Every structure is written in C-alpha cells, then in structure tokens.
Image (tube, rainbow, N blue to C red; front, top):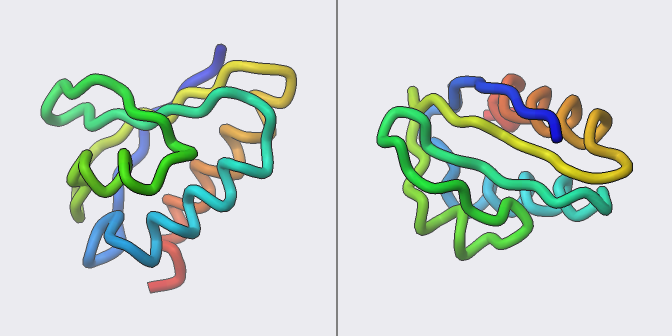
Length: 90
C-alpha cells in the first residue's frame, strides 16, 4: 500500500466535474483507491465512487490523503496526485 498527501487547489474543490474526472482516472487501475480528508480526520472513502467523493465534501484548500493498494498502486497514486495537483484544469 502506498499513500501521499496533497492539497486541493482548484477553486471549487472536488465538485461534480472534477470528482467525475478523478473517479474516471481511479477506475483505470485495478488497485483499491481511497481518499480521505486529512483536515477533518475523516475515514477514507472509495475513490472509485463519485457519490462517496461528493459526500466527503472535499473543498478548496483541503488536505487529502490518497491511498492505493494493489498491483498497480504506484502508477495509480502518481496519476491521481498529479491530477489533483494540476487543479483539474480549472
């Protein structure tokens, strides 16, 4: 299992469009992928479920921890952290 913390930098946080982009990227990998709100100490949620991500309320400036566990965990983590760090093109 690998994990990394990063900060959500896009102005609107993980609302519907960026959340759907995040889920689509996570689903490209066979590894189990979770995302957690570090600031609130929330339990990790399934990053392949748009409903779980939206319910987590991950807004601008939130520090999140992305964790991946499986055969392609390193590639999944690198891609998802890069996506968050890019601000989802917003």
